[in-house]
Image 1 (cartoon, helix red, strand yellow):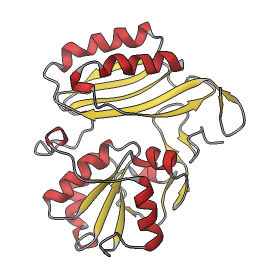
Image 2 (cartoon, rainbow, N blue to C red):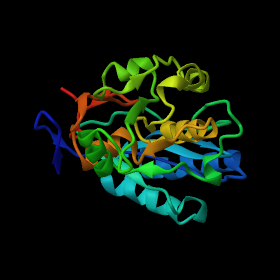
Image 3 (cartoon, rainbow, N blue to C red):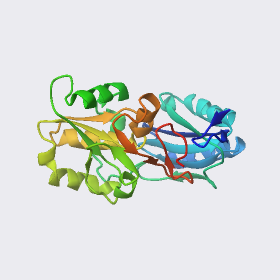
Image 4 (cartoon, helix red, strand yellow):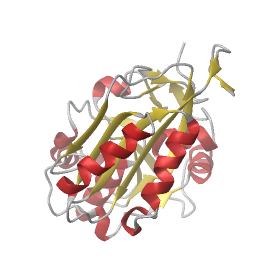
Length: 251
């Protein structure tokens, strides 16, 4: 049994997970995933598209982990990894499985993470870079928040660039407008769980920017490093609203 930031017993396991992987039949997969989730009494949201899967689920730990284990038996999802946190109550009201054109909308068809990821930096290495002010090659490190403005307002890395995005589809044009902030630097794009910053880093590299993605996103950083270099909480898209750097629902 875990406990949240108020010391309340937390028995509901929450996971976020995504994987860019080729899915030829996302519409056919949708009812299969919904039936599996309901059988295990899970609630949350799963998005499937030809480019991959994105999901946020909560429920009994055995049910959640069993669902993920079943999914990983499919070779398309064998590489799927999850980020876990706990809450005292179920943060979702429904079980939704949606078929969409993209698992995270960017409207840039040439950006195909399933064909090759952008290089990533792990949380421990990023913490070291932030402390020393440069990467291992001596280049200035710039943190770029790829989330929407209202998410950033709940918390972000100290000194991170914030382009006041209203939606992720604005990112490519914002990158063009702010290119001078990024040239000749090592840019680390970050987001909640990794999905947006993965596409963002690929787009920046297409534009000639030396960009990396933060492996595991903010939630992964919290898990491995905590709040070092971070101020505030992290917005999540469920009834918890935000989690603190211990991954517990914020007080």
